[in-house]
Image 1 (cartoon, each protein chain N blue to C red):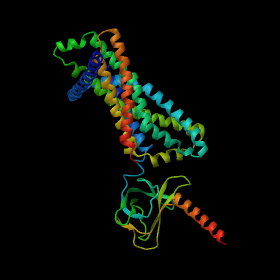
Image 2 (image 1 turned 180 degrees about the vertical axis):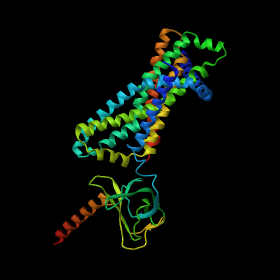
Image 3 (image 1 turned 60 degrees about the vertical axis):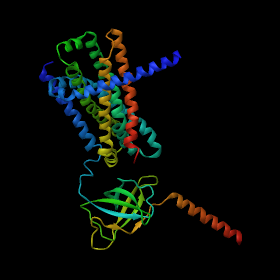
Image 4 (image 1 turned 135 degrees about the vertical axis):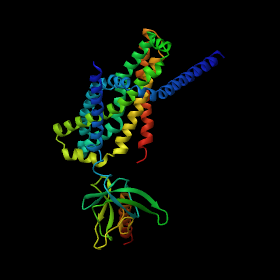
Length: 158
Length: 259
C-alpha cells in the first residue's frame, strides 16, 4: 500500500480511538453532567452519617443539586463532618436542614436538603446546623427489641 | 551437594534472565525519543499493530457487550434492578474487561506477529547485518514497534469498551426493552471520568507496555532456528497474558481498593 494510504488509515484509527474515549467520557460517564460546573461548598454536621459515601448526590425535592465532596470526623464534637458541593445556580435559605436519606429500601444513601424560611441564602463556607442523621437499621432493631423486652417484663410484674 | 549446586545454577539463570530483560527494557525506553524523530517508521508500525488489530478487537468487544447485557439482565431481574444493566456493563468494561481482554487479544494478535517478525529477522541475521552497517537495530527496528504498540493499546482498549457498551445498548434497549433513559442516566450518574475511565486508560497503557516489550524481547532473544521462533511466539502469548493478569490485580488493588 502507498505511504499516503497507510498514513490516512493510521489517522483514521487514531481518530476512531479518540472518538471512543470521548464517547466513554461524555456519553457513558459524568464529565458533562457534573464536575465542571461552578459550585459552592457548605458543610453539615451529622451525629451519624450511616453509609454515606463521597460523591453521593445532594438532592432537594428529589432533584440532584450537588455532590458530597468529603467526609471527615469532627475531632471536637465527634460528629461526622460532611462537605457538600452545591450547584452555583441553586441557592438555599440559611436555615435549611439536611437529612441523610436512602433511595428506596436498599438503595444508596444521599443528602436531602430541605429549604428553610429565612431570607438570607446559604453562602460558601456556611455550616448547616439542623441535620437529621442516617437511619441505622441496627439501632432501630435494638430499640424495637428493647421495647418488646420492656413490655414483656411489665406484663410479668402485673 | 549436586542438587544444591543445580538449584543455585537455576536461581542464577532466572536472575540473569530478569537482568537481561530489564536491560533490554531500559534500552528500549532509551531509544524511544530517537525513534519519535523517525515518525514514518512509527506510523507504519501503528498501522501494522493497531489498524490490523481493529477487526478482532471490535468483534470481541461487541460480543462481550451482547453477552454481558444478556447475562446481567438474567441476574438482575429477580431484584427488579434491570435499569442498572447499563451501569454494570459500563463499569465492568471500562474498569476491567476492556483493558484486560483487549490486552489478551493484543498479545495474541499483535504480540505474536512482532515476535515472529523479529525472531525471523534474527534467524535471517538481518539484525546482525544492521549492526555491521553501524545501524543500531534497537533504534531502527525495536523502538518504533514499541511505540506503535504502546500508542495502539489504549486506543484499542477504549474502542473495545465503547463498542461493548454500544452492543449492550442494542441488546438491553433494543431486544430486552430496558428504558434507554435509565440505561444512560445511571451510567452518567455513577461512572466517574477520572476514577473509572481514566484508570482504565492507565491500565491499558501499562498493558500495552508489557505486551509489546515482552513480544519484542522474546523475538530478540529467540534461538535462531524455526523451532526457536515457534517457541518464542508461544512464550510471548503465555508470558504477556500472565503478566497482564497479574498486573491487573495489582493495578486494581492500587486504584479501586479505597472507595
